[in-house]
Amino acid sequence: MSKNILATYRRPTGWLGRTLWFYEEIASTNDVALAAAREGAAAGLVVVADAQTAGRGRLNRHWEAPRGTSLLVSLLFRPPAPFAVQAARTTMACGLGLRAAVLEVAGVSVDLKWPNDLIYQPSGADGAWKKLGGMLSEVALSEQGEPRALVVGWGINVNIPEAMLAKLSPQAASLLTLGGRLVDRTALLDCALKEIEGRYEAVVAGEDPLPSWRAAVAWLGERVEVVGPGKRVSGIALDVAADGALLVRLADGEIRRVTAGDVSLRRQFNA
Ligand code: ADP
Image (cartoon, rainbow, N blue to C red; front, side, top):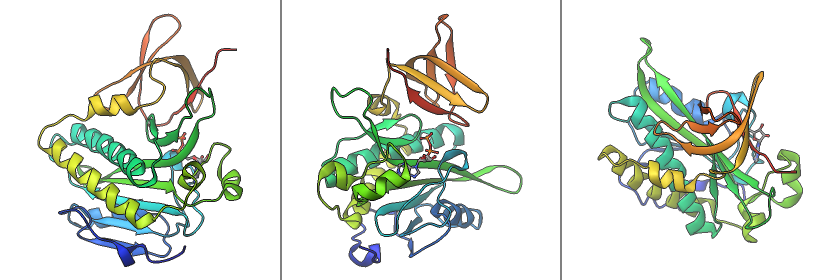
């Protein structure tokens, strides 16, 4: 299904996606959007690729997406001040919008794995969670180091067949394998932009998406492990904070604030 996604793109939004760049193949949609942001591109730019040669997750991990099977998109926002607060809220709004679009278009119910993944958790089957997608939020800075724009990118495994998934990651799943049918990537893009635009406008109008985001974040109240370079913290994932940090209660009762920077979250199971 390697085609120009835009052939049937309907643009159901006002400003988000009014300018949309499609690439058959580029290094990374986030890199293109970040460069455009630095050069003054207007908010609402959407960058879409059918394949990436250097797709990134957090921590410069590789994001794999077999050509023609995934939805690889980056959005350019210029959140109003205060930037840090609005950027965190924008990222939450994007996660919630994507989750809503996946449910609406593919009929698959996903949760958000802190800080940035879309996962599927079958009810009752401990441990069998699957990763369907990841988001990566990055800030474009001015030469003076001031934040100028926020780029939120994502990769979603849409029509990746079972046999290809095992090569990506042991946890990888796709909307095809979970929902049992091919999903129209353009319809998913249309819906995601619509869902995100409304939520972002609410953020700009002063609404805090934290309560909705908290309700969508997986594993709160459960035993987790946070793994980073040279560190490992175990405890109960208590809550998420307004800035998106994860609050973990350690065995000695201390509540540790974990920021997304350089760590990954795992679920721990009782033996
Ligand atoms: P984390 O899951 O720790 O938040 P990232 O969000 O940085 O990690 O995602 C990168 C990781 O996701 C890679 O190290 C790889 O294990 C895995 N991965 C890469 N491509 C895919 C994919 N298409 N589907 C599922 N997992 C993937």
